[in-house]
Image (cartoon, rainbow, N blue to C red):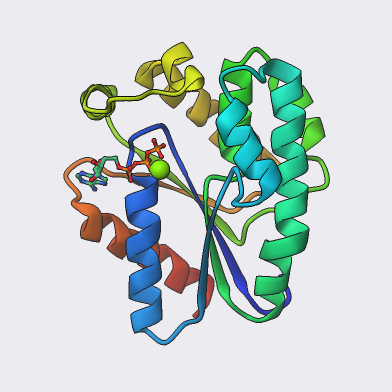
Length: 200
Ligand SMILES: Nc1ncnc2c1ncn2[C@@H]1O[C@H](COP(=O)(O)OP(=O)(O)OP(=O)(O)O)[C@@H](O)[C@H]1O
Ligand SMILES: [Mg+2]
């Protein structure tokens, strides 16, 4: 990864990815690291198109658009930031596709084929919580996306577990973080402990 560190933060809707990414970035910056925070779908015209068309673009068409966005995101943003020796933190990456595109009807192996040329993150975190807490958090939201409505916390967790095992079998370096009984700072402390093991 040419000097930088590439961290992916994954997990079901409402588990706390965006919260954890922001706090992890703050803590790393306080330690003097240059950090680049990003998200998928990316903040590019294609990424924004995907976000606004998620209700109408479905199945294979959506899966291919998401994969295309990922390759463009890598080329335009992630790899240059890594080359500049930054820590790149991505809110969602390949594991999310292996779940969300599967909820949308695609087989795991096809989704994997779309992502065959994507480099693994240096470390991919899978944030985990109970389906009950995830359901309570989603119920507090006024708007839900199509795929949030199609899935359920229980089903999402099952598919994330599958995707975690699938990526582990392909040599991806991952850590599953049990977020029960952890406040956001507690989650980030665990993430930092794993990252310290990565770069002694
Ligand atoms: N460790 C935590 N303990 C308690 N509440 C948390 C924790 N992490 C996040 N939350 C709360 O849970 C809610 C969902 O968090 P957040 O928006 O970060 O989740 P997300 O995984 O990014 O969701 P989405 O997949 O929809 O983007 C927020 O209200 C946030 O404040
Ligand atoms: Mg989020």
